Image (cartoon, rainbow, N blue to C red; front, side, top):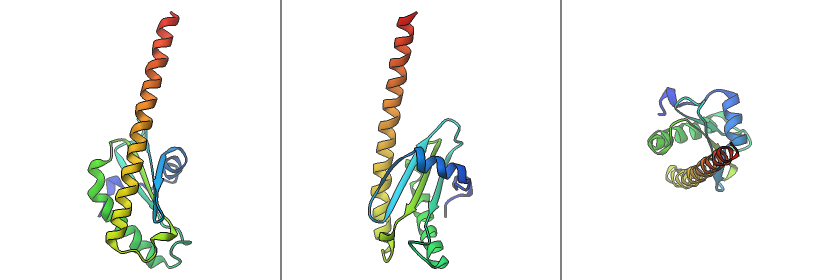
Length: 136
């Protein structure tokens, strides 16, 4: 199970990750991720809508499976990162191993996009500092 200190529960942080974060997905899952200095630790949240599984027992089982998988992957997620894993209708009927493969694929691509975005942002900040120094 995912440790309590890594669980994302606040609605405004879910919104932040899904609206401003980098994302990648496939037919089963979409993974959103965003970093920020105001974020304390690594937080992971899950969204399994009624549209995917009408019955609560099925939604909860899927969230439990995803929490278990993400617990093992916390070490590859940078500190001060929010991650939201959203299930899509394609996840229905998938085995645990198929969900694991799908999550690995989407998470790897999302973290690569996030790393690339952060690197470009740092380069832009350095260029801006250089321009400011030249102005004086």
